[in-house]
Image (cartoon, rainbow, N blue to C red; front, side, top):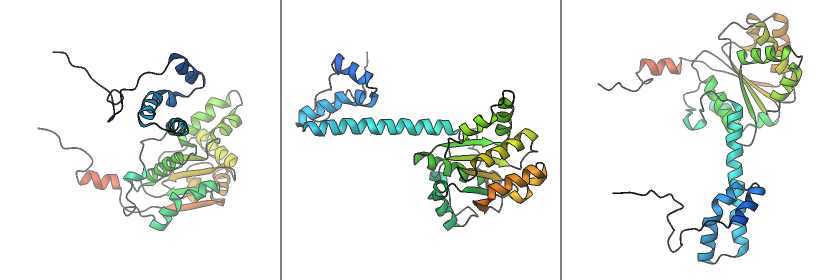
Length: 271
């Protein structure tokens, strides 16, 4: 016995016949005009419009709305992929009551007004207290609002510097990074900072000063960065970083460790 599968487009709505394909010349015109979302939805919209006797202006409005919505979705996906977020965490999974950062401060940060003002954000505190989660959720929200975000670790900055030092294009490479509205540098202080990484951080902060927003997470307060990198570089970096910055300090036990000890870090094994 053979079976057939149908898609949502194959199933007609009440009183509406199955949508016929577009004429070949119209299909070609939409391809040339690069309107893939109108092309995808036009058969169903036109069939509905004919059955329900829509005004021509309404047909045009619906088709253009589909194109705009589709382009918005594609642009969002492109910005999200370009950002390079580590896990995809958003505020949908964020528990503001579990964070040691005061709730009014969290709410103020979520407005992203500080990004529009080209101010910086420093979140520092022990491992496992939600620093990276908060920065990623803020970055995701910025992307959803149409901003561009770039995510780095210190090691990434070191690699960037070494790659472009050979042909003397470091300045141009940093300028390309700063096409983003918000640049995040995650997990400073976990590992010793190589010279290239320290220089990369300084160059980034210096180039972004009063032009773009930098957000960092660190196990150390920036005042202690001279423990990680040469004092001269640390002083120059921190001076520029903190001049227009919001500093949030986290505290408490590691959320990851607490969940692990409570058996919440894994799913039960099947026996």
